[in-house]
Structures are given as structure tokens and as C-alpha cells.
Image 1 (tube, rainbow, N blue to C red):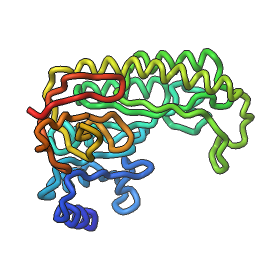
Image 2 (cartoon, helix red, strand yellow):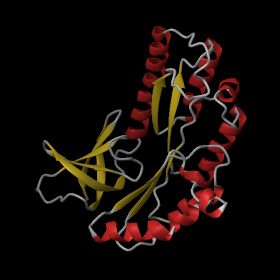
Image 3 (cartoon, rainbow, N blue to C red):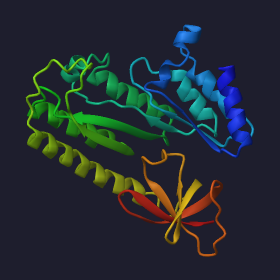
Image 4 (cartoon, one colour):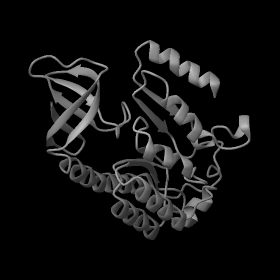
Length: 265
């Protein structure tokens, strides 16, 4: 942990404003070194580094989710209230086939807890369609899940056999045409949800960090957006005064399904 804090200090001294703590499952940080989960403590220590404005975490698996991390997110304004949980599916049968320890009930209960503790947090997930044996009923379950939860950010992948995974030995019995149709249907649902979420931001003042220039805009992100993955904020730079790598308060004036347009306040 001390090494990571020192690395954060070095980066901050070079002008870095946002740090992302990332691994296949960051919730397990500390289990090998300290025999217990320490991601909440690490996140707090990183946030205390002078010069660092935002700390973001990717990816947080649902099994035995560290609830003390939610407390850090709730209390610490530097920690992005952004929770990227790759649920993959909601059908208990499919989750068990994937050797996931969670059930459908566990999944809904965790989301409810997160929303109770962090009502303004952005929830992001990835899902798999066309898993071996996925029935129409199980796909309908997944659609209901997406409709009920209304994730802020969502990605969908078609199942493909990957050597070394628990599903590799299973019969890949869902046709590619069905997989594609299911993926398209989920993404169409999510596009409508994303548009609604973005339109709700019109008129609001948000804090953004600026990343790059593009045409007449300065492209930035809110705390709810991971770079190169999520939505972007297109800032109108009418007076050419906006600089890269800085934080600005902006007012949202327009929105589409994936991006919003803003002016600096």
C-alpha cells in the first residue's frame, strides 16, 4: 500500500489529476498481502495525496462486495461515486454455470444497498448474451433486469468460447444470429435509458475534467465517466479559455443518448 501511495504522489507531482485503481477485481486488493480486503483503506489513502482530485475504481465484482468502500465513497468527495460491476447475467442458473457465487436475489439486493447508500452514484455493468443454453425466458429475465435497474452505463457482449473458462467445455448452442439479435435488443433498450438519464441533466451544473480538443468543443468527463469508455461532455469553448487537464463547473444545455453539451459557468 505504501508503494502505491508513493506512486500516486509521483504522478500528482507530474500534474496528474485523476487516478484509476484497476484490476480484474479491485475488491480483492489486500487479500494476498494482508489476508483481508483493503481496497477501502487504499482508496482513502490515495485520495489524501495532494494534487489528486479524483480517484476512480474499475472493476468491482459483486461477490462479497466490500461495504466499507461504499462508506468511503459516501463521505469522501474525491472518490468518484462510480461503480463498475460486471454482473454478466441475472439468471441464477446461468450465474451458477459461470461459477459465479451470486444469485439473482443477491444481485438485486446489492444494487438496492448501493442505491440506498449512494443515491447519486453511477452504476455501470457488462452483460453477456447467448451464453450456452440461454433460453428465451432467461433472456427475458435479462431484459427485465436492464429495464428495472436502469444502469447509467452498460455494455453487452456476445458469448464466445474462450479456452480456460469454465464454459469452454459447454456446447455453444445459441446461434450467432440469435446472439446478435439479443445484443441489439439490449443495446436499444439501454440507448433509451441513457437518453433519459442524459436529458435529466439538462440545466444542471456538473464538475468536469477536460481531456482533449475536438472541433469546436473541449471534451471532458464527469465523475460518472471512465475515460475512453463512457459518455463525454462536449464543452463549448466560445472564448477559447478552457484548458486541458483542469476541472471546471459546467452547465448542461443539450443531451443525446451518449453525450451532453455544456457551457462553462
